[in-house]
Image 1 (cartoon, helix red, strand yellow):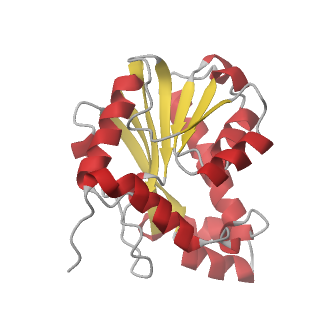
Image 2: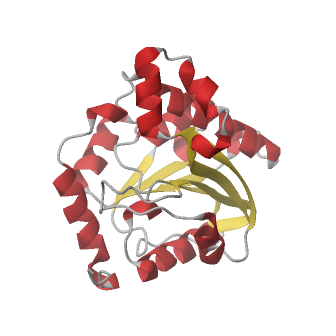
Length: 234
């Protein structure tokens, strides 16, 4: 059995694991019907979740994404009505940070660094977003440090917007599922509202090869969904 990575080495471990992945996986390109359907489902669910939390004036909300990658999520938030000047992304990997800077408006603040050490004013943000970041962190202590940093940055009345998968991927040892019980342990003071989303990608790809409309049909079965979308209210 492999020993868990040392917390001090986890940032370097993330860099190494992403380097092994090489070029972007074409299965997740938005030219693929399954990926596009999953994106549309997730964005609709985010809107419902935030409106349900009383945060309907998106342009007035300040949001930080940890692990903002090449900017795809921030770009989606702009489409939903968020203001560029109130969006911030922190990304560890230089190439992804550069890609985000090239595609996003200058008004969006982008920081390259480790989100556990970047100084963020306490209780300064309406929303802190993470999307499939924690499933890429294999060290428990590092996850806990990041969760504390995220929680401290959220103002009362705001929250953490969480999207991640809950089950392990037996074909990919570089990631691990984050069960809902683990989310509760990471954010013990949060009032959590969540729902299962995202049709299991292998099923989604196979179904959409037959017909894109099958995504919605199969996704009506909660047991076939692999991710949770959560609002962790402070």
